[in-house]
Image (cartoon, rainbow over all chains, first blue to last red; front, top):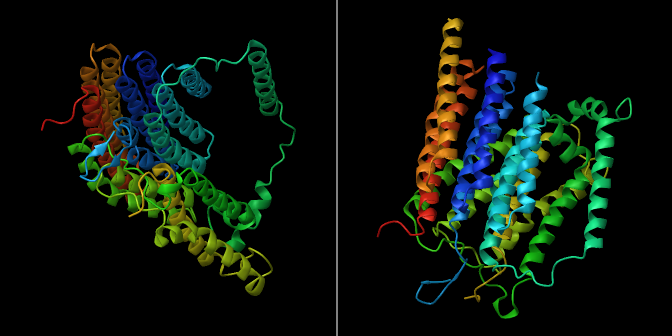
Length: 93
Length: 310
Length: 97
């Protein structure tokens, strides 16, 4: 079981690495952000697999933080110019 | 056998790092930087450093990416004329970097036997402090002075960022962080995630006493939740001149300093803890520090004031 | 009993890996940003979810198992929101008014 989990983690690392190719290729920033998203989710899965295989439950906390902050980069990507609100409340970009 | 996945991980980190440095567009570089951070936290897991991996995941995966992408959004395109360094300078830089890399490789590949380490000495006295996580014991007991100074540096960094405010706007609020148009999914995320995030942040701070975790990881998670709320335009960034804000910023270092000086009376000296009471005092200091870190990091990302004070 | 748990873990984790593979291949091979996003969400949701499901019987105590479920729910939430945000960014417009 432990070997199976480690082998699975290794294969998952390979897949996540393949997804990195999209980051290098992807014509638009959205494509690259998707590759980053895959690395985040894949990394979380790898962390969980290693946590279960090695019996170190502290690593589950890492997956917890990764999952919590997974969307933040995507949120930041869609930020435009930080503007100041004018008097009527419309943004000044 | 287990060397192969580790080599693959190292290769991936290198590829992402090379991409970060050589990407044409600034935003692509930042995305590469985020990926490097995520892969590095996996590397830390493989090196059995769970605390560092937690910090890398929280800071590299969340806070730094946010900070840099916002900076990208603020900056216009770079005009590169006349900024290109000369060839000799480039060669010198390359040589220096190679020397540093070679020195690091030599230290790692040909270590002194036996490797110098303070780990046994650190572990020997953990029982007196009463905490179970050796990293927290080092940070808040053995090297508490370093941690105190680091937190003061954070306050100074915030002051430095605030110093960039134009004079007429001093005391006002930072510019709105929100996206150019309001977005349903973002609002939904900002309403659902922060309560969960705050619980997880407090859990990380509390858990740091005995298991991997601690003030910085928890504080970063709390700051990220606050930033999410501000980005979704559910709350405005606070004005810089608010006393409550400034109090929260200095609360952590102040409590730490007070505890340090109190050590003259109740224990052996500056920043020493009375035996038997170390854990409650450390937990109190941790709580104050984490709150300050959360506020400082949030205001750091929000930036200098951009609107005149009301 | 533990043999049953092991078989369940191996099956679920393998299924999760299959969806991760499908998602990665889709991310690399689909022709368009939005189609690639669709592939990514398969890996995000199904791949991750099945892996977590498979790891649940192996967790040493209830607390870890509950943490695994929380991680899964967070990934669902974050994945759904992130894919919407990336899609909005990719089509350069806002949500329909």
